[in-house]
Length: 252
Image (cartoon, rainbow, N blue to C red; front, side, top):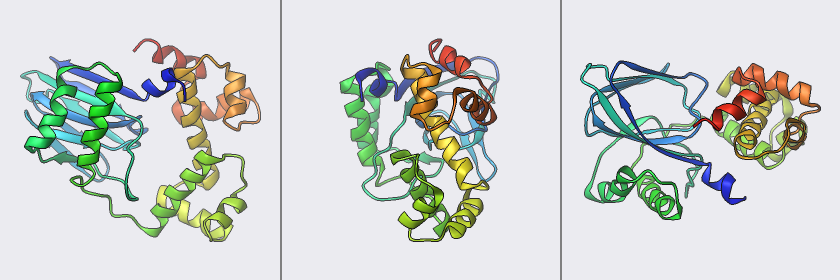
């Protein structure tokens, strides 16, 4: 992985909201996020959970989590840190849920430099992963069904090699192709092939944002049969053309 691609996996920001602010992440959070409310109040709402935030709250939003959020809900102004990162290396399997984080002296000590300086560099990334190592033993995990574990394993297999047939993935997972279809449909409400399209589009979006490869090159690298088919699938998933994704990433 080259330096540009690596450092684009992180986004450290402070946001200020004077009026009521709204964020629509109904397609799923692009990264994992650690947030810290410096001032004001906010609300994060999904289909299954609602989180109320106030000044001094430290919180975590998992990558892919679908939600709507409102900031400065009390009208007094809101200021908050957003520490975004694409990869959460885990010692053990499973993911974490949207949640507030109980602050301790050690957590505050590791988070304070990230809050004070939003520069993305080797030092700050090292501090972030020291903090994540601590948080792995603190955050509440998602209770996972067999179906969700199969879905997680399939996504890992697709990321490793997107060219396999579903029968080959099923064999790797020691289940039948029919069972694979049922598990993914129950866990995610979509077919395995649609899941593969989404995983491949995620990879394609990362390449659009962090490289100068042509759309044709990216389509081929991500397993699409043609650039036109890639554009069609990408629009159905992201609601944007490749040029829009690339342009927006360069405006940040």
